[in-house]
Image (cartoon, rainbow, N blue to C red; front, side, top):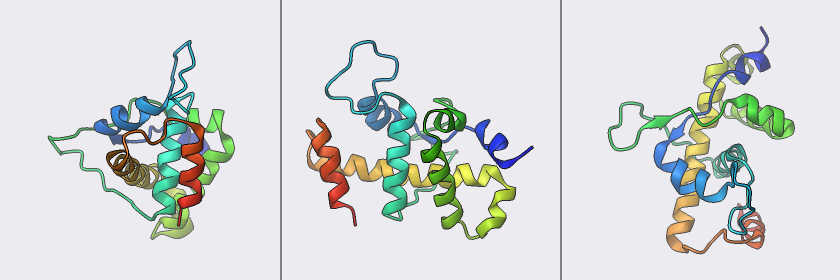
Length: 154
């Protein structure tokens, strides 16, 4: 089995608090009516957005599966959803994880570690997003906010 086939069966992990605070807040998911306040149409898009923000800001956030304050979840979607809906995004996340790995290309032998790295940077991105929301509760209410965030990146 190849790397991509193995990765597609794995699910990204995130803190449960991030599901409500970011994924559900900014994704329409299966809603019929489009909400002007939800920029992404699916959960994976908000997850990828958080991952990219984490990678760009070099902010991994280790996940503690034993934490009693915030449980680690991985049941929202599998990586195959990202690959099937945004192939270029999926490959970019994999390449970013390889670049951040201490193992270099040898990480290709362990797809679980690739997903773990993506998950850690996504959770770092979630933290950055939540900090921006704490500063301005009305941020990310329209597409211009996302463009502004892009322009402010380091």
